[in-house]
Image 1 (spheres, rainbow, N blue to C red):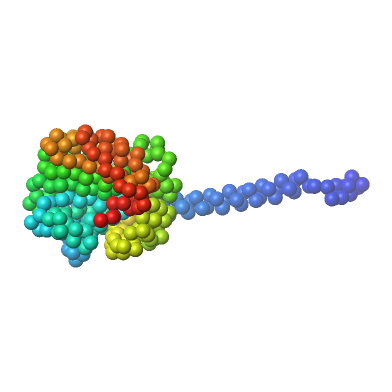
Image 2: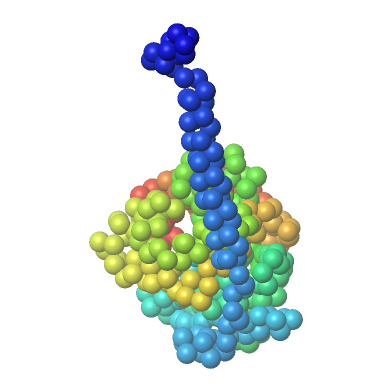
Length: 346
């Protein structure tokens, strides 16, 4: 009896403590498992194919259209500037649409310079159809898509301009049709992941977004969430240098910021698929020979790659790599102050 009394005299009960720890641990593990299962379910729910775009949707939005070479997709595009001017194929940046580079502000510049801009929306953005869910998009398909537009507009020879993620798309076109290209400008273009991984100056938020958007299921969920976030709230995290650059531009050219933000919203008006379907393509090595673009230089025409020293979205090392792939390409360095938003300055 005395032994039993001693056991209840305030000494720790190892068995009781262990039981409580086991219960808490079991509850915690169950809760974590529940969260993981819920996220997996949500990812599976949002990983859905986009509904097909209709011709009526495109035309009611004031855009033109063609079908892909195999007839499976609708591709929206638009034109502006001097209708009799030199044609310039322009390619928008990630998250935007053909209207980014054919905004009212840009169209005034084209007209003043005697240029006719033709801008095409990448698959999964704006009102260009996405590829079927699970089918990887290749940059080797893009020249055929653009050529469908050029043929519809009766364009033979043309200039090329691609901005940011549009740079490698424009490079694919220039590589496919070097003898038709009158000159090319690649504005602060991106580079493959093998180059990106060697760069320390990329903004943490930019690197995170590329990582998460490039993952199946998790990327679908991230893209779905991004669709509901205003670009003005997203840019400070995902592209802080663009955010800061736009703040500087706003004072003198408020229309530039407004048109950029409006077009970012238009980028997800039909689907969020472009945000996740395009990242893997951008991070892979180009599936075509960039050296072929050097034929443009051999023909006595210019190939220019622009860069900005304070760009933390696509840092200068990316443009140095890009220019290094094209024999005879010239590197044009912008002054600091606008970061990646340097491409928006007049």
